[in-house]
Amino acid sequence: MPYQEESQFQKMLKLGRTKEVLILSAVIAAVAMFLMVLNILDAAPVPLEPIDWVMIAAIGFLGPSGFYINKKQKEIELIERRLPDFLRDVAEAGRFGMTLADAIVVSSSGRYGRLTPEINKMAAQIDWGVPASEALNLFAERVDTPLVNRVVAIIIKANDAGGNVADVLGMVSQDTRQIHLSEDEQKIAMTSYLAVIYIAFAVFIVVIIILSTQFLAQMEEVGESMDLGADRMEGADVAQIRTENIPTIEFIFVLAVFAHGIGDGIVAGVLQSGKISSGMQHSFLLTLMGFVALRIMFGGLEMMG
Image (cartoon, rainbow, N blue to C red; front, top):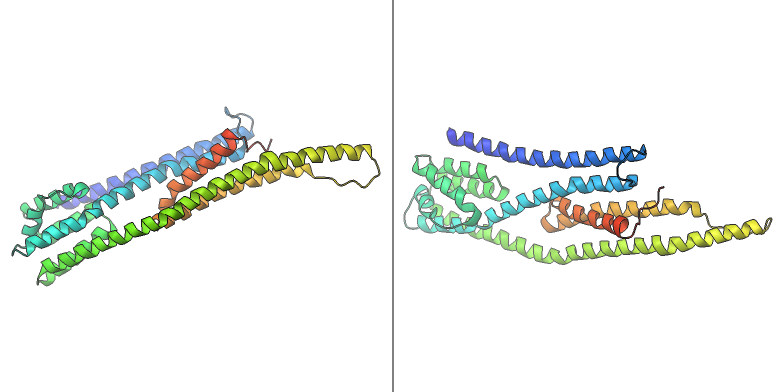
């Protein structure tokens, strides 16, 4: 059927866009790693440290992918939010004795935000003679979200079994609305945890900067003065500070910031929506925050050369 072909084409198009974004992200990361190799060979146009390029590669990969995935999830949420209104209108039309197909066509005149174009397509297909069950299946394939697929499966089974479909639609509408209310409560409850993650990460960066610029710097000065004193007092048992280990300690600090940025971002995404993919955007923001604070503002990555 032409509707089936159109649906498959749209799904391939959506998948292609996702692949394009992932490929773009991978190319950005690969370019950063290539520049890191040039930097090691003293041929890079920008004199940064290898760890700088690793962080830039991670930021370049997480940025486009994270924001695109977040955008798609928001579009899905906007569609699913209006689904209970549509189901309620179809149920009300069904209580006046209309069939499921007629109820869908009548309800398509309503306004349902981002869901409206898909409902209009479904109503047009029914007007062209497509059965209601087939039109619902095509609607689910176009929208292709877990909630829509589940709701459509329930409606089709109820319609095929006969009986009062309006009551089933009413219950599904209430259940769907309750799911959204639960999600809203979860988001409100998790907002404070997200704030804690960002604040804790910012405090962690400040502590790292203070340790690098104050404590370790003073340790290096004291170590140099103690080495000078030991040279003057040959044969005496003088305590020494191994200042050659300070760059390694600073490098470990930066690795800790990098690991926390990625890990805390993933945790934030799981807390926010229960999906690891949602954490990519948070990982991008936290890693970028750490890179800017350590490299550009405070020069905290000057350690390996």
